[in-house]
Length: 153
Image 1 (cartoon, helix red, strand yellow):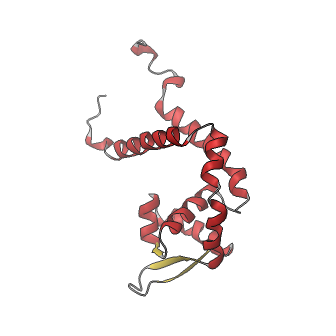
Image 2 (cartoon, one colour; image 1 turned 90 degrees about the horizontal axis):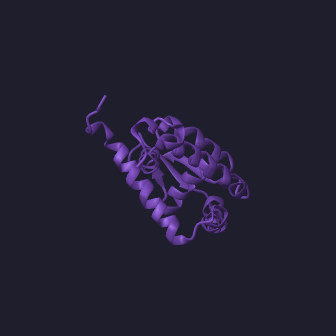
Image 3 (cartoon, one colour; image 1 turned 45 degrees about the horizontal axis):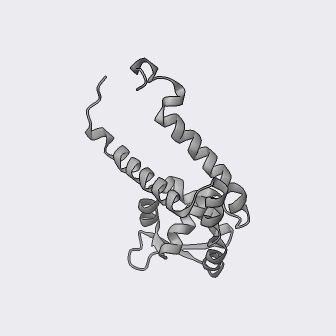
């Protein structure tokens, strides 16, 4: 067991490992997504819309854990690419509905190759990728409740 005085070593910091892993994985996605003319954040929006569209900006933000101020520029760029359309919701005129265009819906066929390609690029099989995903989702959930745990300082 490592000594507590080594707890402040950079290599032992969870935040450091997560930060570097996040940047590295997103960088690995970049050339794969370039074929779809998407950035990684745009790809996440498209994934959410392929699961169910139309969706309001509020619903997309909740699904992606993004604020509307972050989401709005992504949606504008996706609209400029011809992948989505934005219009006032018929159910609630205050809400902005985002829908797939025919080009955006058709892009899903090409995107079907992305998960397998990324598993290969990262040296993961389906089982290990699923286990890693489960661990990350548990960590996200724990971080969401971190304020419920008293600070020991």
